[in-house]
Length: 356
Ligand code: CS2
Ligand code: MN
Image 1: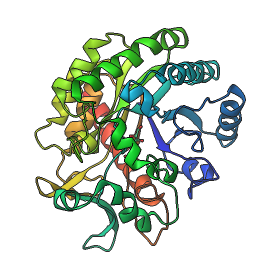
Image 2: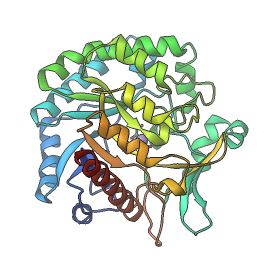
Image 3: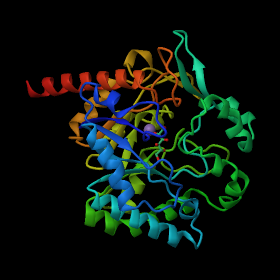
């Protein structure tokens, strides 16, 4: 595996490439062209400019998170063709730039959903949190407004104000879309892009829906083992793979994370590893990575990844906000650096033990 950190680009991120470079064992970043709207073409020159900047710092571009999917593709409206064509061109340009992993998601309207961006924990750190009660009370149109204050003035991925302004129309668009329709539209999209992925050896890595159940009555499909295997089988190409995000699949306590990892051998192209602490089944917060601080057994998760021969990029996903840092919620430097170091430690121990 290659240990990485997510980096949004110097205009958007509070963390610098120079800082990331100093985290032991972190050799690459997962980055994006953050100003691009879903459906917009990424040119070769723009990609190369970003890549050169990363490489000048001594790090590599280990992959993209995300090239976002336009709602027309998810809903399956006739204008999806133009957006799929643009997506294919973008993939071609990434391939030419020698970038081979693309994370994306197929969540309608909202990317991840949290009800608090800065819940204070007993130790004074702040974390993202979710309570079903709060979601049940809120009108989806007010969702953006309710968390905007906590964003520290920073634009958050998936919550772009331009999209949120059109939230009513978005809900209207998805009215006829149920789980099966969403699966069909995903299949259509994947079948169209697989030839360019084959040509440039690009691994597509779908990110799970977070939380892993339907919110606001919207369909959500990338949520559990049967669904993800259905997706793998419906387009049976090794380039059709997943981002295994423990914090997203793990929102559903029925999901056995190590077992899911083992069932996806060869198809996990990217791993997000973080821990959650549950207060009840539908009330959780994002804890430190350490097993004892949350609910998941991080050793078993890393061991499952090791045993299936996972060799893609991995990153600590969200971190807590600690030591007075001001950053995009979940994406500060300090706790993610601690997370990377911890995961590297687990990996080293597992590796040495396996080789004895
Ligand atoms: C990320 C997701 O911050 C996060 O939770 O893991 O927003 C992820 O980047 C997207 O869903 C992938 O398209
Ligand atoms: Mn994730």
